[in-house]
Length: 256
Image (tube, rainbow, N blue to C red; front, side, top):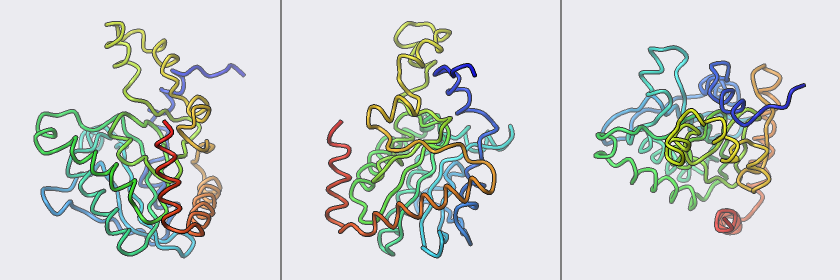
């Protein structure tokens, strides 16, 4: 078998064959109820979030999703959340803490929506607030990179007690095309950039940026296996005193 290049992983992370965040969410939790709105401005469809039951344990799930066709991709800006989406995520994180529900984030985004209006409405501020809230969250918090994990848009939901990544996913400061354009003024060198950026799960786990690589999840059996891993990790985190859990989370990111 030919070894996959870093850019092969980039293409697979972006593939339409990836399990949809909606399908994944409804596969790992029962009786999922989607919650809408940021209570301030709007409801970003790119952020699919709500509450459900994981093996009888109430949990909050927050996902950034892509569309499954051209029309729905346009509706969710190809997986790039806007400020109201991040405000919705922040609202649900605070709600989860209030009701002592663990938080699971499922991430598939090339990055936050790069629009002038998004910046006017506080894009950067909302990302920073989610990072701050995530670091202080007094409930177990698991972050999972399902496909693309691009820039601050992904980081906003990826400061959990542990960060997992699917086998065919990437996590980076920007796209290989963007990296090549900035560094070499030539986006066609994206293949080369992907190797330099060390954005594959194998590279990320060596650097301590992620904690675990999850085999690709598509079939019901694979979804159940992933569900079991999530439940076991939540139980492990629940057994840790809150202040100790927060200190471990802080140290995890302080080391970088």
